[in-house]
Each structure stands twice: as structure tokens, then as C-alpha cells.
Amino acid sequence: MSGTVFVAGMLGQPATGFGVQAADFLAALQRVSSRPVRGLDMTPRPDGRYPDRRDWPGPDDAVIIVGGGPGVALFGGCPARKIAFTVWESNRLPDDWMIPLAMADEVWTPTAWGADVLRDNGVDPARVHVVPEGVDDLLFQPHGRGLPLFDELDGFRFLHVGKAEPRKGTFELLQAFDRAFAVDEPVYLLLACHNRLLPGFDTVRFIENMALRRRRWVVPVQPLPRRRDVAALYRSCDAFVAPSWAEGWGLPALEALASGLPTAVTQFAGHSAFADAQNSLAIPFRLVPVTPEALPCFVRGDGDYGEWADPDIDGLAEVMRTMVRQRDVLRVRALRQAAAIGQRWSWTAAALRACDRIEHLLARRQAVVAAC
Image 1 (spheres, rainbow, N blue to C red):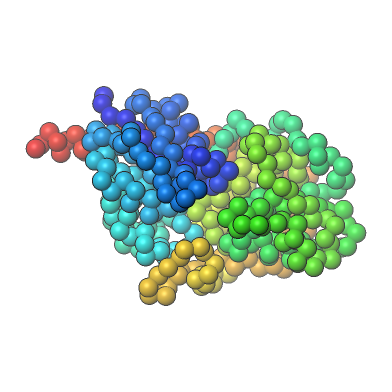
Image 2 (tube, rainbow, N blue to C red):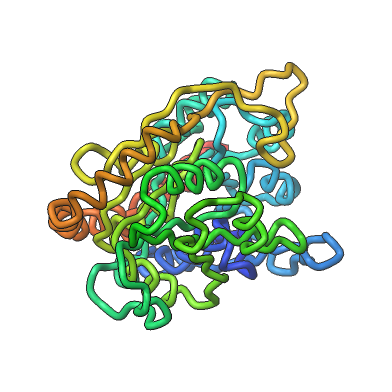
């Protein structure tokens, strides 16, 4: 069996969503693939340029480009089979994605919802395949240490993990939390919402600008450098909330479910792949048009930016009250679901699915070469 599988992505930025995906996917493929698997770090340099490549994949190889659709263009002159492994959060794709995606032999996305979006936007249905992402089930699980830093917080602890930006529903979450409980009710919201993409972003200042009446119950969590500390953060909390307007996948919610946390999400877009009535609480929402400034670098000449989910703030507040009132029942259910989540959505399972697709793709290439 000839041919190497390359995974290209932001391997030098493991704290970003695409960075985590590329690193965990690469490690899982290296565990299960019968072919050699190598990583290609495509993290941009400080000057904005991409690393020079001396180990360019050859005609017998496959390269999986993890990231946004335009990333495929970086491999325009590469003779290998090219696979775009991508996600997007609206049901309309940016204009500058279409030509790069047309260069890919296959386009992978982790959810059936995302696959429908690709097809509806003109990507050849024969090239679109659902290959799930995963969760590190050995790291994110109910049993293990928490973070001693939060032991002194005597009360119920909600957790939210995600960039502070409109798409994540951070503003709506803080409003709902402020409405849901009395001023002196011992319910905390741990907010891990740093935004590395905004120079000078300050989580504390972001919270202070909200002028919340329950400000002292909101605890900002600064970025944790080690993923085992992130896993411990989940285990330090009683519930997880993700009122996202849309997710391409929604890794924090999946990590919370695998950690045995009662979890509330907007069961829309990426979340719909793994969140259902058996394992999570649904945050009410309505579909509304996406505004052009809501997603970075989202340009469409026709002005149609699609739709996404607008979470209902009062409905979210009621869901949070329910999670406090029914904490024991919901915790038992969450612990019962955690093992199934970790097994079904493990990176190993995702990598095995990917290996099957890779073999189909390379077999087609060999058949074409033989016929010539």
C-alpha cells in the first residue's frame, strides 16, 4: 500500500477551534490508519505568510486541509488528492469559498446539517461527505480532579466556554443569567470567553460593560494553557450552557456532555448532530437573518447571508432556573449519558470513518491511473 496521508492545519495554535480539531484528528489518524500519517503545520507566521513547504504531498498521497474553505487554495499546485475538512455557521457560504472548494476532490463536514448547506450552496453533492469530529474521551470524562481555584465558590456553578462574540450568544447568556435569579441567590456563572482574535480584549471589562445587577456572581475564567486544566474546569461546575446562534460543530458542548454535565444548548446547526432531548435541554430560539457584520470575513455579492438561531433570553432564563431546581435528576441523567457520548463521538470513531473515505478516494485515483 503506497501513499501517505497528510493533515494540514493550524497545528501551532492548539487553543483555537480549528487548531484543536487538526491536532486531535491528526493524533487519532496516526493511531488507527494503516498508512503513514504526517502533520503539516499551516499556522500563519507573524507577517501573515504561510510556512514554506519542503515536504509537499505527492501524487500518491492524500492531504486533508482542516480549516476554512479558502485553505484548499494553499494546495492549488499540489498533485495529491485534496480533501477540505471544513465547517461554516450560516446556511449560506461566503463567496470566496466556492472556487477553493471546487479544487477539492472531496469536501468533508462533521454534520448532516453542514452537508446540506454545502449541497444547497452548489458544492457537487457527489463530493460532499459527513465525517464527524470528536471529543477526547480519555480527557473529558466525569471522574477526575477539578480546579481547586473554584472550591471556594459555595453555590451552583454554571459554565460557558467560547469566544466572546455575537455568534456564541455571550451577551444573551449574561442577560438571561441576570434575569433568572435573585440578586443574592448563590448561583454562579463561570465565563471562559476570552477572544484572541480581538487585540486587547479584556474579559473583565466586557462583563463590567454589561452593568449587571448580579455582577458579583459572574466569574471570568482566564485562558487555561493546558487542555487537562480545561477538562478539570468542566468537572468543577454543575451545568453547562451554550446559547449559540450557530455552530459548525460545537466542541465545548460535546466536551461538557462527555464530562457528565447537564447541558443546555440551541439544538440547531452543529449542535444538532449530537444534542437531543435525551442528553440535553433545548434553549428556545427563532430563525432570523444573519447580519453581514456578525461573522468575520463573510462576504456575499447577493447580500443573502442566510439564517441562524436567535436564542430567546427569557426562555434561556427559565431553562437555567430548571437546571438549578432539578439539579439532582439532571445530574443523574447526564452521568448516564456521558459514557455513550464519549464512545459514539470519540476521535477514534471519527478517524476510522475518515480512513474509510481516504481509501475510497485513493482507490479511485489508482483505478484512473491503471486505466490510463
